[in-house]
Image (cartoon, rainbow, N blue to C red):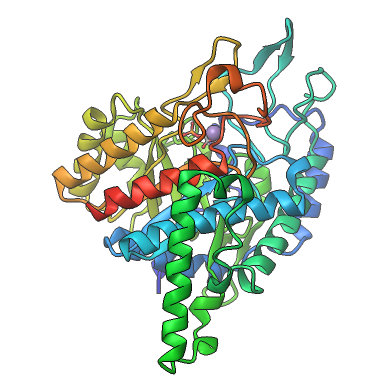
Length: 453
Ligand code: PEP
Ligand code: MN
């Protein structure tokens, strides 16, 4: 059974409290924080240990080169976007991308949303200047509000509870959509959003959808009982977020009654960010004791020996499916920086999934001061990532992207050719720029081409 290595004996859900914790908000009241933690600890788990184990099994298939990971969603989920249409449209785009990747390559796709909990953000500075005024930085709706005024930016621990309830509502809808008919392959046409369908990628998608329809009709005509094939009617869709605000993660950590092991039941998969992955730090300490599949972001400053040390702490049993290393090195440096990391981890014997986050190493500021990314750079980093794995004989296990189903104008170029002068039109992200549905489906086609090659 995955996670069958016993959990560490020198660990407890609160042992992170003895380590330095980066990126924690300065909560104004310790009593209010304690009250929120206590309440959270009494609330039901959001996900079950068995589901996290199933994801670990599927990620073990990715580690073995037999499946591909698609991890996608907002940079920072907004409480205001916990709305049926927004959640549905994001899910549609992710399902579309998965169809494009699966149909185009014949490789099963493991689908993981940055959804139902991605409410907290690490920041590079504690203050930011908005319209000439210096404000405490926005840290995600789990911590404070993004409105540009000092009061909104005060960390509020009741937001931990609000985050839980928004995650619950999101997850409830995701479960209903993925298990209740919406993700049925017979609905494959219905996932094409109008503004996506009008694009080249959308039309290419329609052709695949038509072929899938024809294949289903053919199988039915051959007498295959499609109704009995669960995989045609339901999708396994998992949730993930950065495990950043440790009081929240600790409060949702529960002991599994079946195995006696601890799981962080706030999401199926948790990752540790580029800014909080210090081997001796609180975040790594917390995550090493929970048996969920884990991700580790790896940026351009990463020293291979440090990355191996993090692997040693988080994956002492060297178990496939436990660890996904998410490289975010930048288009211009991926081919130089990735090989020594892959080699060092391979030498150390950790059977990790290597995923490519082509977003965070390619962020730039537009002339009018907006954070943006060029789709061209995003694709270039993915191509570099694939090229490195091809040279080393390792498996390019997946992609990790920031996207939304909405027709936003946040990333430059791509399908729809968004220009700098278009960015202001529909720039609604509360943190980093996201691919819109059209750009995302187009990217899936290009990744499918790389996987086939
Ligand atoms: C993110 O994924 O939104 C993020 C902050 O990433 P990183 O930790 O890689 O900078
Ligand atoms: Mn981001």
